[in-house]
Length: 181
Image (cartoon, rainbow, N blue to C red; front, side, top):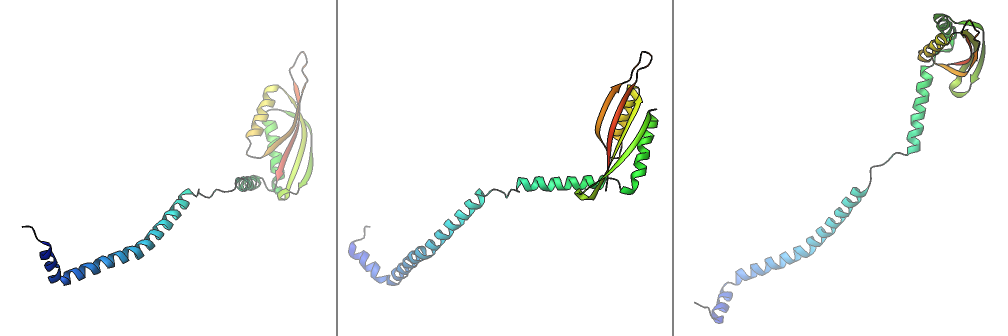
């Protein structure tokens, strides 16, 4: 049952409505694809480029110098907050004397030199003194001075041998600073 060309033409003529609707659908599809498809293609390309740019951008990094500066500022403020008040000077001197007495060390004289520091309006007391005794108690005194909750800063330290044939003895001269806020 092969259809002849005349039969095909007759079928097309009788189904004009079908072919008109079919042609309109094809034309609408082509127009839709050309207009909307082009717009969507452009938009997809733009979005793809934005995605690549955002993906390539590294996380914002803080300026290293700024981070160091801020950390130093926090450290300095923490240091200043840990310092004793100026009114506590006699208490700190008393603590120093107690450490000396605890280790049985004798001291000749002690002098204090106050100095104002413009930085955070600090006050520095420098104390000079010498102790005479055996090496072990002086070493223990230094350890206690270092582990004290009070901030004692040993600026200068000198050791002189005072041993004789009968007794082992040393003299240690200190320059200790105390800071106050």
